[in-house]
Length: 344
Image (cartoon, rainbow, N blue to C red; front, side, top):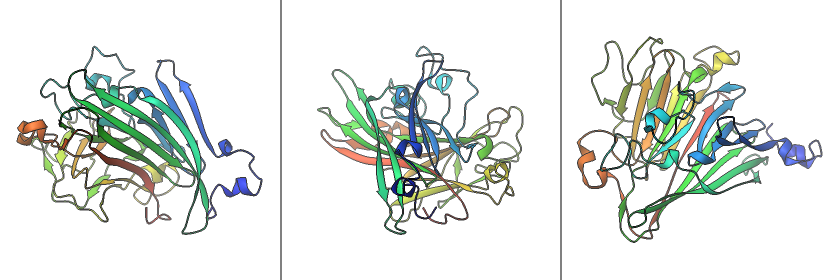
């Protein structure tokens, strides 16, 4: 629909915008809350208010692209981050730590397990300048506080945007130091792809130098290509140094994917999963490839600080520092690119 889905409202074929872009506030049997966003011709996602407005399940043309961990549920705050990690399209790590525990901060920090405040959502008409079409944007916004009584006080203001007619979800963050002292703020966007979005031979493509694995590679494996699923196959964490960007945006592409086969196309000739981010605020990239049976996940992880290695021994774990009253904007965008959508 080159004229955009909003045309159905304009000519009277649809009476209400919620017929094209719906948001359902649900509480699941586990007690977890979700804002279930479904848009015509676009990417359907679950936004999670109790997990820092991170993203849960994501569907494109009826095919799941987000990874779901093997855990049946969240065992609660007495357990560590990994035991509570249920997967989802995005788990934000930081702003107090990324990677293994450091300096009193737990693994991967607090954001993903912190409820958001002042959560709200709305719809907006978005008129396209290039083809005269119009779509409907759904916005979900809120703030996630990471504050101590006498120490660091950091707030992340987040906005999630999903649109009709566009197979993308965008997360826009503004990170603010609302305290009285400088604070190091490590951040990492843990984008998790799995299930039908990956087939043996799927490969992570990045315009960067050769990946550097954190540990020696298992026999017959490389850091960016999925082998056949195997029992007890180990995971590989790698850094992708020297990430290059165009117009200030860096990009990682997962291709080929299993989505094509799932919707009746030839495997290897179907759509690609694309992850984009601002290279100015998130200059690093890590990946987590785990091809074990029952695991089968690829993590694409833009970051602003070292996840592994000796740089973590630097002040603030090697993270950039926010002065009192200072803020920076960052974010990540995840989407599906088909042969009919060559650009962004």
